[in-house]
Image (spheres, rainbow, N blue to C red):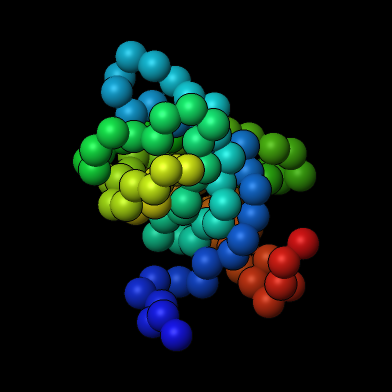
Length: 111
């Protein structure tokens, strides 16, 4: 059994995301799971070529609507289908939306 290394709960959820990992090209993506610390994004095209900083936008529910929130993140693991990202800089509005999402879904299981 794997030991969980996250400080906050991870929830499985597919959210629309846009990656910007080479400052020239934006890539549509979808999250596989998310926590307050980071997320795993699945990529239809090539995943990031190397670990390091990137920017992403994730569409999160905010005040009854869906809104893109921007995150600065670090690519910490790369797989053939995507990348694990650790959030680096998160603004207050994005963190509040993320906090609401994670704790409103916690314990509901897969959907």
